[in-house]
Length: 103
Image (cartoon, rainbow, N blue to C red; front, side, top):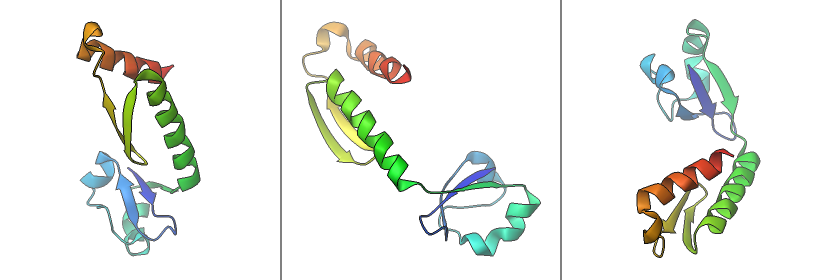
């Protein structure tokens, strides 16, 4: 099980399915669940918002190089317009974007 803690390491902000399976939930106070952490050998990590922001910037730059029109909605969400890419096929071009991201 893996959890990621808030910036001040006070609460769980995200967790994987194994962590959910043992009863952990987003928003739980980290210090109140120490017994579960130890009992289930939960791996925990502090948030790294600076790194997250840098990764987000890199992803948004990559997106902007793959489409002509894009709207950034938040640090981890953007809307890409595929207008003009019909000739490639929407699914095929979407797969191209995914594959480009794996490089």
